[in-house]
Amino acid sequence: MDKNDKKLSLDDAVKLAVKLHREGQVDDARTLYRRILEAAPTQPDALHYLGVLQHQAGRGEEAVKLIRDAIKSNPAYTEAHNNLGNVLKELGRLDEAKAAYRACLALDPKNADALNNLGTALREQTHYQEAMSCYRKAIEISPEHADVWHNIGSILVELERYEEAIDAYRKSISFHAPNSASYRWLGYSLYRQGRLQEAVDVFRKWLLFDPDNPVARHLLAACTGENVPKRASDAFVEETFDKFAGSFDKVLKKLEYRAPEHLAKAVAALIPQQNGELMVLDAGCGTGWCGPLLRPYARRLVGVDLSRAMLEKAKGCGVYDELIEEELTSYIQARKGVFNLIVSADTLCYFGALEEVTRASFEALKPGGLMLFSIEKIANPQPGNTFILHPHGRYSHAENYMRNLLSACGFDLLSIENQILRKEAGRPVEGLIVSVMRPPGQPT
Image (cartoon, rainbow, N blue to C red):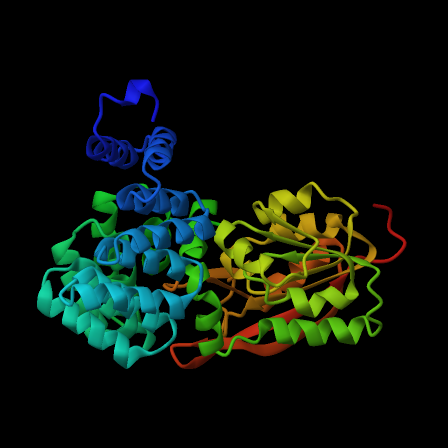
């Protein structure tokens, strides 16, 4: 610390840095933490809280080192052990995270937060019985711990024990009313139990304290059929999938998700030679399920998605030449005549009206280019049906609507196949795998 800092004792400097950190003045806090460490390199609080700050800034590996150094300086530092676990969990290093939480609990067996965090790490590894044991212990220590009740509900949803989940989420809300996640999953659990009006009431209550929440608005429209949007808003998609990214792959495996597999077979039937010469777009790439299946065809493979967290997961596939965070229709509209192949798995189920994105896709293809996509199918469409928004928040479409639209846009329909895309509430979700071509010889 420089001469102007000497007026502060070391302890006072740490307190000031933490205050700045909590008030959101992160640059000043970081500077002060570093000055403290210049003066006292092993000061545990400065090491610990600088680690927390660096984690919040997306510098996870640096955070791990700093917090480990804090623990070396003070092995009995329970909060540091707990936060080390949190950083490691966010980095996907779950076994190391569990070890950190257990080290915290060895020092403080009644630390409800550490029990909750250990339970969550165990839950992510599907060790549900052990996770529930941690949560129950945490509740014995802190009966009104809203996060623990929410996490109990999350396990019960994964186990499809919806009545018990409803009770857990109601407890979470009662102890922490403005808890958007608990409102969402309470509404979902009620819907899964066929208690649609109760779900509507939950979403209305959610909007009372968070009137602009895009997820609450979308799900309320889905449950009531009132003010149904033509597609899910950008804000809904971003919020939903940023929060879903961590468990996305695990959940889809559990639901026996097969849309990418069906699309890959359809691509192979149309393009038997995997010669790596095509410009390929994975439209709504998510965490990258289609990427490895499309790579053999691509000279350049581009993935586009609105969710930054999903794109971070997709980077791990190591197969994309470019990953772009942008709304799909806007991106395609600016790429006329660029692609030989566009593939979209389980993305158009977040669109109701498909006119704009379909026309844009036609224009984005080179003559002779192919587009293949999956949509969920209205099983028994009524006259005039085009699309329906369901209480789970996704749209399904009438086959005739799809056929007529593709024809109107100028596509040649190559095939349309009925397939099971995944399961929902234990039942198969019927969908269509659609293959179309922009006719060869047309100018771009």
